[in-house]
Image (cartoon, rainbow, N blue to C red; front, side, top):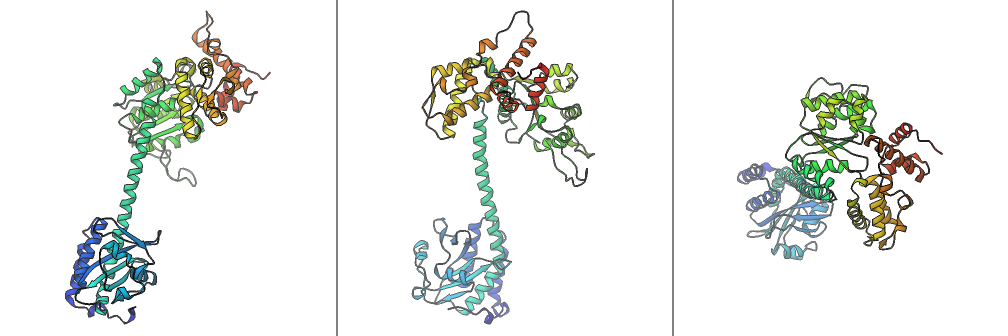
Length: 515
């Protein structure tokens, strides 16, 4: 039968002994931490107060429209459709119910008895409401000892539910937060394993002495926090080396933050590096910079050779004192950051021309790593090519492919102006466009098939300095790339691994004109 809550006596009409028992229960609930144990204690004490065979707190899972009992014999929660059973009826109607003979009630759901191993005779079901009045579950008492549940039991049960509902709501919220935290921890652990694997030194592909020296050096500096300078042409994997240093070091659990110094104008670079205080300009909100974001970890400053003198001076101060100020601020902020800088520029030449600070250069160059151009390690090219082929066949879910001996030989002899990045992009294109399982010479891009081979472009003329030979090589590489891209500067810059502005500077420097 349905009760009429308007006719219920207030709690002052309940016996003092039972009121005291309910209030004592509420006080004890605050000490419970784990949600299932919390509900178990509440159910056990409520059963004593109501003299019932058992009681349950059924939590409403609104997303799945289910009622969930966390207190079970085997510890596995029982779930059932929230519209079923006497508890479901109390939930949906929002009114308490007393059922004297459950087996003869049309709303009774016998499936719950099979799951809970209880034979239900009579039921008391009361909706459980949050502080805002939203129904969050159902309190259900099963089998009154010595008879059936009375209106007095309903009054006592309603008082008990009103008093304990806030604690149930709080415990449920804490349980959900704990679950989400544990899930995030599991996801984080999995992501961390993937990150460790992705940037392990084993993924620096190559058996040449140049590559093996880099791997040994990374292993040697893993337990220190000294700053590192990485130099090398564009596309030679400078950022990959920086990440390998970070993820194989003691700082690996802390952030790796990267900033391309050439991608930001001078007036924005300082606020990006050091952060900015609120109110420096109209509408400006306070925000932290890359140094603070990387605190405890590693800050990777790519293209550091493009920094202006003012930014160079400020970075030098941070490296020397491990302190900085936000833009517009007056407070020194201590920082614990390892700086790894990278550039494709010849910094010694930039120092001679007054474009780069010598003291900053030597402060960064505690550890110096030179990433080799691909033409300098031709023996590693087949290994790299096969690595990328296997990788992209898997990622793009295509049938496995292999290179013909002639294709690999051409890869090994080509001079690769764009270095590893160009090789990787070429193989990605091959995986997408070639349907056959064997990749031949005919499948290679024209500029690779018909471009100059390594020994032609790498030959040194007697009487020239290394600097002159390198400049001559760079000039011819740019000319050939421009020709193969029909003098489209955007495509040429992409092929060479340069920014468009960097390409324009080199074209002007070498006096390269369009025919």
